[in-house]
Image (cartoon, each protein chain N blue to C red):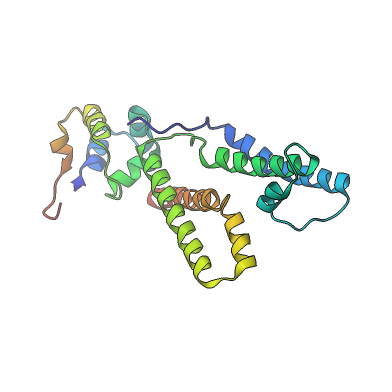
Length: 151
Length: 66
């Protein structure tokens, strides 16, 4: 069975490095800007007057770091990427999309403007986060059932 | 669907890990196939058949409710 394109196994490490480097980028931003701006990333991107000013560059770098980091973690191959793993991967992806949009629907229906805005901004990475959690959990369960059977 | 992989393995005297290595899947996959939690693809079933030198109908058996 031909799998969808996945990154090599080791690229998961690049993912972790991307996510961890979010912190130094934000610290550097604070040092340079010397002030706390409590806006969410999307408004920052939208409000930044023009491209390639410092505010825009930092916000863009931070957002891209998180997204590429999560993509690498989510879609790097397992040590043995066989058809069962592929099935778990696709199941988890569907599950993550359902959960994400379920939460979005609930939020749109019952929540007022400011929080709604936060949730929509979080939606930049929640599908990937839900996917990673669910996929890891399924693999953990798989390994656990193997250990129980061998015991 | 049930299968007799566990029995065939015992006859050939190979472990789940060895069978997994022979057909290029993880040990977990062999384990879940044996315990009827996962239905392998046709390609994987044929590979298993080749290891045991048997046709796949002899290894995988359809049940009433399939």
